[in-house]
Length: 108
Image (cartoon, rainbow, N blue to C red; front, side, top):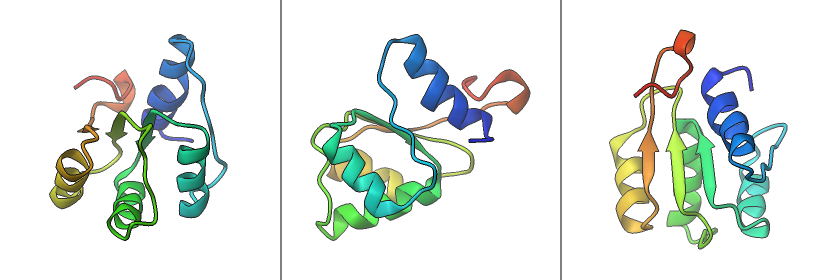
């Protein structure tokens, strides 16, 4: 978690608001999918590569995320087809954020 985006949106903000945080050492898609379903995770923050894998699992019917209410992507541009798939087909708002590393990523 050396990216400012990940630290701010996935650790600092949830702790500030009193939310629980589930952190994985590495991104293993099966573990992340299991964790979202097992812990009833409501907000998922990640980078586009993660959302591409999760979108594929959703399309293949290998995952269902009824507890997920919001997804936030950052770090690099998110492919439009992934944004559209998750926003419209699965009714999960997926927001893309960006900002200056020097000012923390939550600027725009």
